[in-house]
Amino acid sequence: MRYGGILDLSTVDFPKKLCTVVFFVGCPFRCPYCQNHRLFSGGIEVKPEEIAKKIRDNYLVEGVCLTGGEPLLQDLEELSSLVKMLKDYGLAVKLDTNGYYPEKLEKLIGLLDYIAMDFKAAPEKYARVTGRNDSAEKVLRSLKIIVDSDVDYEIRTTVVPTITDEDDLLKMGEILSSYNVKRYVLQRFRNEDTYDPKFRDITPYPKDFYYNVGKRLKKFIPEVVVRYEGEEVL
Image 1 (cartoon, rainbow, N blue to C red):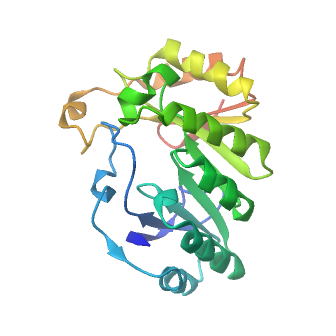
Image 2 (image 1 turned 180 degrees about the vertical axis):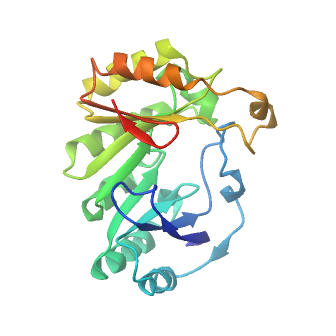
């Protein structure tokens, strides 16, 4: 497994749980506003048991968030082994994913307690945002797998000016509604240290934008959450 490090304690990466965050290296996307671009490459090779042991020794945490990069880029057998070890330690496991690997997701999902999947843009913009022509198709396949499962989840969009506007979000909300998505999260774009330096000069939407569009999205989706300064359910 290509491993980029651990954040020992987090109160924000796993809803309602104090967790450890495990960062994996590698991502198939090249989103220009990404702040984790240093995880595109590098890291070190480790065995699942090495990661599990580091976490087992932290008696404060209730859960583990697997993030990146893209965790599903890792070897599926090793990733499954890690999840099983963590579950054996009595820890809940959350997966952050961009949705590009639906086949792997379908095989792993039964082991997970929570999934957060990115829905980055309106489908017609997906290739431009991610750099992958087949990304929208694969993400929608992953969306169906998640919604049809028994695993708790959220679908989330980092709302980036020049990529996503109010009309895009309403269109995305209708798509999510057609898949029976129950929880949709709008996240504030942060312009610090983005992969594409030009995005560091883009001003995030004001807080009111998120609330106004979030209330309109409530027509489509039962639970809409704004993460701007903390988390608020609309």
